[in-house]
Length: 379
Image 1: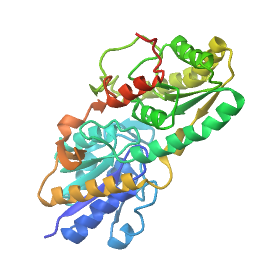
Image 2: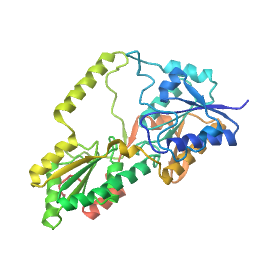
Image 3: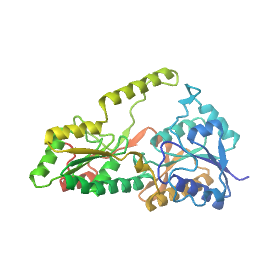
């Protein structure tokens, strides 16, 4: 009897998702004679048993498409909103996987998906995951698919902002995505020739940023580009960087959904009162330097469009490797890439960890050698 595998895509959309679906599906069907089904809209589709049979014709022509043909959302199996109440729906998902006699469930997503997949694995679902995110912060893999495309988009945006910054003698502050890690801002800032790069791993001092800009002004430069990660914060320098354990979870909102609603309301009010952190920093730079400052927030444009060749290749390689692993009976792992090779990494090692930029990373050393400001006063 042929094996049956399911596929779902969870979390935020990311370039390369369709390439990964195609890689898993085509290899499973053509090479191993498996049956493949796809669950709609992430873990919610698994909970509601909303699925589609992925035949070869459905997998044709999707390699270059952005987004995901299966749909995605950020809901967690153990904290799912059902009729206005937050509930643990893990058992329903386990039942669904058994009803379909799944030999493996392929969950494609970022750090949150790795944790959610492990929850299912601990209840007996044979899970295999693939690492996608533009943030490049999944532990256990050298790179995630989606990152290269987003890096190219962010770099092009910084390239384009040079001309307006130069023409108007401005400070241009570019906010780049990346969640709580600085890979995307650091990479695009270096590739785009930013003069200051601010990342979460190095809390910045706004006066040091202003000093870097004024130093450029004194040296004859009439403009400055500041690339800032959305997760960058002002504060004292912290030791460390590198692979970190995620912060401990807060209160269990599964039991107290009103807590989650109140927290969300407080966060929304705070954001409305304080405004965007990058915008506040921009205003302070104007005050400290006397120069006009403008903010560009790239936002979700970094997630969209056709995936780059590198992301298509990576997603396809990891997808086919996942199909081969499943054919051999493997599960409970993420298929990542290390030193150019697709390798299985135990989910117990991946879940709950975040790959941040080490403070001695070569990209940071390159930035320092170039004289790029990193938000701290020179030692």
